[in-house]
Length: 525
Ligand SMILES: NC(=O)c1ccc[n+]([C@@H]2O[C@H](COP(=O)([O-])OP(=O)(O)OC[C@H]3O[C@@H](n4cnc5c(N)ncnc54)[C@H](O)[C@@H]3O)[C@@H](O)[C@H]2O)c1
Ligand SMILES: O=C(O)CC[C@@H](O)C(=O)O
Image (cartoon, rainbow, N blue to C red; front, side, top):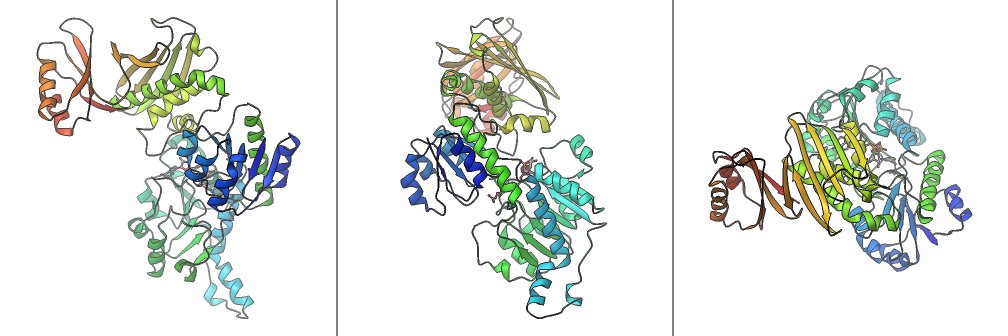
């Protein structure tokens, strides 16, 4: 099998692959067109941050089984396209943590003490001392945005400088922050209070331009900002304006919205110091990430499971084919439940009944969690980060596997506890590949988990269906199907309507006002 390294990757890593019998080609600085031409020959691709693995490249990658990112950020890889094509994407999340944290500290000190500017002046023959009077780090408040691996490593290090550390990360718990000695606060409050703000979060649709014009205005005039995470998290134009207008004191940037970048208005400002994406560029980190990613690739190409897949639970092809319909079902169950929940999520239990789940349930649990958490959170939740996100939010996840014990041959039941109570959903496959929701709360139903639904618990009494139908009908919303479930005649009941179009807010409100309707939830699957 052939492996292509399209960015410079440490030989120690590539040699692991050669020793395993793989053919490894190193071809760097290829254009998209060049990559498209050669990619069909390869079973694996190794990249750092320079190669942009676009949908077009992935589309052409007929034999590609795995993309290995020698580093953390996978924003240079089109994950959706890779997932769609069944290509596993792995990264090496730990190998460069210290390198990036130390680079952040180096930038922080250089920024506070004007080291690059003083260095350049002296080499140009100017002995300037007064002009380069700096600031001490001791006693300052450091605001860390993103408290993952690098953010917490930075926190530990700046604490040694006798600083106060404040942090913003919507996905870590108060307890964890307390353990790290970091005071958590909302983003706006952090920006108002920090003397130095440093970014350590991924770039995604939610974090693009997170630090925009308005947020820069919240910072102290004396404050410094550092970005050693990803370009695009700080709006570069707004940053330029803020620095030029003296709204903040200075910036240190290792990463840029467009890379490589050799010209920028920011480079002309005296109070900006820059490095060309060097955060991970230490000998140690490059060896670490190359070894980690090489081991992953060798393992996956030999049919093993990936440890750091970012886009899919890793499984051999056979198990994947067998479990795929259950993976989809589990995700839909989670997704449905997420859309009818209220109150903060405390716990999720997934119960598997039946022989289909004897060997492997992990991918199903990840799928159920992804389905459950993704609609509830800002961040994109995937199969890999779902358990981490759940853990960080203090959501207890339990998995129970039973060979039998239910009314169906194979049944997945998801029970969720929120601050407001418990909700249950269960599903199965009819004829082995037709997914059905067969239980919601205490009601037995038979619902195809697809399309637009209205979930309407109500009192079992005449006219309920008619009045709901009338409201939707008057709005031109066609009811494609309806399922009813009830406990006892005249007691509690539920209707699950399948709609051709999503119900609008006014119709939902009108239905909720019908006497005897307990709640109305719109669900889109
Ligand atoms: N400059 C470099 O060469 C270099 C080197 C390594 C990593 N990085 C980048 O550093 C970043 C952090 O890496 P890491 O290993 O610490 O990742 P990580 O996944 O361990 O941590 C990221 C943290 O960001 C938090 N987060 C996500 N969305 C957020 C939001 N909207 N607001 C606040 N916090 C949010 C997550 O909860 C998580 O705790 C990544 O973007 C990575 O690509 C850059
Ligand atoms: O490959 C590099 O040098 C950069 C890596 C870094 O940005 C990362 O996200 O791990």
